[in-house]
Amino acid sequence: MRQTFGNLQGHGGPLASELSPPPRRVRRMAWLRARRRGHGLAGCRRGAVAVEFAVASVPLMLMVFGFIATAAVFNTWSSMQSNAQYAARMMSTGQITNNNSGALSSSNTTATVSCSSSLKSTQIEYYACTGLPNWTTYSVTTTENCSIPNVTVSVSSSASTAAIADIEKIFSGITIVAQTVMMKEGSCP
Image 1: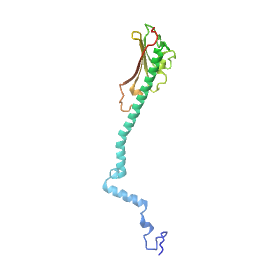
Image 2: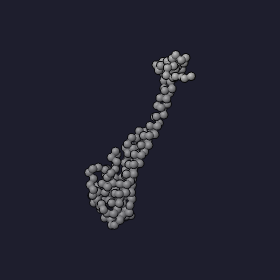
Image 3: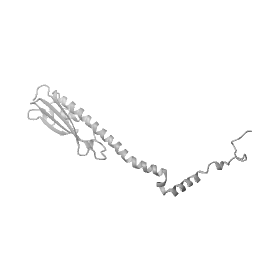
């Protein structure tokens, strides 16, 4: 006996319409069942998943933005440290002999200035400020101590502005500082 599956009508099998109800009917039946169990989203599985996602996504997003903020602070601090070391090396070897206040001398041993475009390449602070991330402001302090003899270059910034997006204010009120102290090579003024 040969069976054909193309046309189920007339061979004693179920009709094609009896195999699966139309989609509209299925949706209506599911809606009625959900309505009997509870109202709206509370009784529907899709509603439960939406509520679970809303509850779980808030801490997840806070963690993601917290990681991004922490990475931005460490990136900024790393750049600050590198620039402070370079400026201190330039100052300690005598390659640069001027700070923002003028030529280094026994009366002009320290200067503090904010990083800006007005700094000149003949000033120590210029090398401490070059190439730093531009989303925050920096303050540079240079000191030459001839009694020890050493030089100190310190770069500081607010951690909350360095964090780019400090949503939970974790870094508020914190100052990040990169400081380098090097021995003075050659003679002191």
